[in-house]
Length: 131
Image 1 (cartoon, one colour):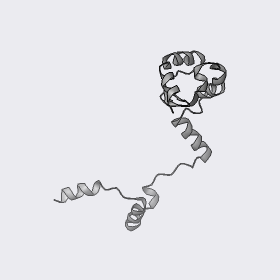
Image 2 (cartoon, helix red, strand yellow):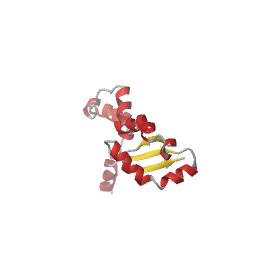
Image 3 (tube, rainbow, N blue to C red):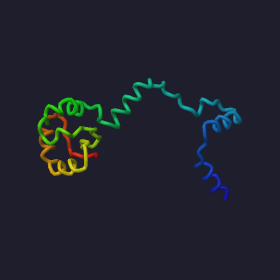
Image 4 (cartoon, rainbow, N blue to C red):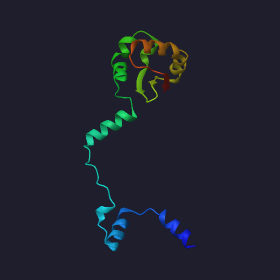
């Protein structure tokens, strides 16, 4: 019975405050069980890393698409489409003005992919449509 009780006590996780109280009660210095914290990073650096890790919205490929879309597709059916984002799976999300145009252009997605991959350095895997 004592053996089972000791095993269950070992599995307990204590909060920092409880660990400090236990250390003070036993006479152990509080810094003996805590590791030093790294210095805090600037907020701008953390925000920039998070945005770059979670979204390819600021990737060079997406920036090129946004700036040159009208020039490349002027006078075609894709002129009314707006590039929304490029996600981490390299899927390009395009916003169509309405459902009729979206459905019409979905049939030409493979042709659009071939054209975009020829124009842009980065590899675009698929096209997704947003209404």
